[in-house]
Amino acid sequence: MRSISENDLAAIIPLLAAKIRDIKQELLKGDGREDDMTDEEFDEQTEASDLLVSYNRILDRLQEEYEAGLAEGTLLPSFEKLTSRFV
Image 1: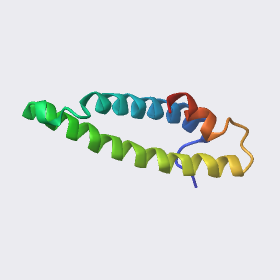
Image 2: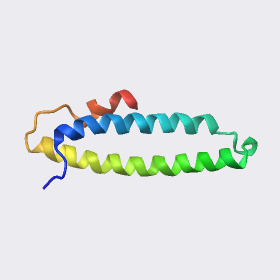
Image 3: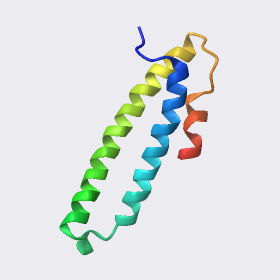
């Protein structure tokens, strides 16, 4: 039994995908600058990286739930359609 509806997932998944995209862009700004970063900047980069891993795991679990609903016949856009503009 799902704890959240596919309709709710269809709203949440793009929001999480957008957040993941934003974190990735933030991390790209720091690529190659590790030697020039302050300790605080390095800590922020590390926290953002950890958060990205966590958010990706959550998105994977949401994708499983969402696709299970689609397989049961719920008429909603595909997972790829929900996330494609954020990749």
